[in-house]
Amino acid sequence: MRSPKKTDAALESRQVPVGAAAATRDPTALRALRERVVGVTAIALAASVVIQNAMFGWADAPGYGDPINDVLAWHQQNRVVVEIAVGQEALHLLLLLGFVTGLHGLVGRRHGAGADWSRLAMAASATLAAVLALYAVLWIGAVLSAGEIAEPTPVFELAWQLHAAAFALALPALGTTFIGAALATHASGLTPQWQRVLGVAGGGLLLVAGAASLAIADGSALLFVGMPGYAAWLIWLFATGVRLVRARAGGRPDDASTSHEKKL
Image (cartoon, rainbow, N blue to C red):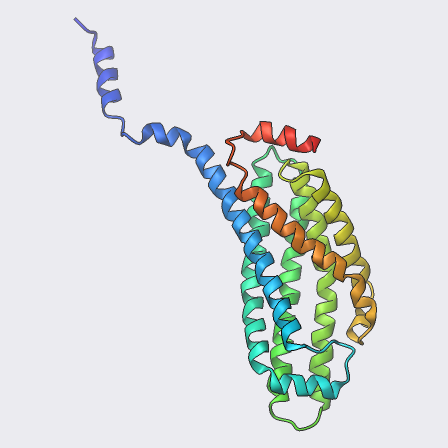
């Protein structure tokens, strides 16, 4: 005759839902899903920025040092291009903040390694988002005023210069975000050594260019000092996104992948 305790235990085991076994695997599956979502966000952000810059090249967008008459003429003839670009900036804000926030969560779940750098990246990305919002608003003001005038006015010129200044100030914010994210992901084992080097070097170039914000807003060629860093950011985003999306393809556990990647 079975004891009451054994009978109760047997009844409880029969009442366990069929999905309970799967639930025990949920932490790993959920962790993999989080990594994939963050990875897809990074790839989407990089792709959207590349498409935006390709569009500017196709439309032959003016530089900040071009004559103001040429700038006015371009905006009058390419209002649709600006509308698309501003819409993309709204998307970039969502993708940027979503990526950095998701990355902070991934770093925090890996024993906290790189958490300080991750917090720096979050603060810098919030600043970057605010500056990019200002950049987009000023561009909207420039293109709207361009449609109502035949010749450049002080208001149009001021809007364009403030737009340029916002872009220049975005460079150091992006550089700080880049450095913080690169150091955080490497410290937590999410990315290899070469991506850490790329992040520090590229972010450093963006910081150097950002130090000349006034000159860049006035049309200086110092802007091009930061362009290799900008390209490095896009490469890093894409490479990090691919690694996160494919992180679980081989079924590697966190600790094993972390120790292995730190050696690379």
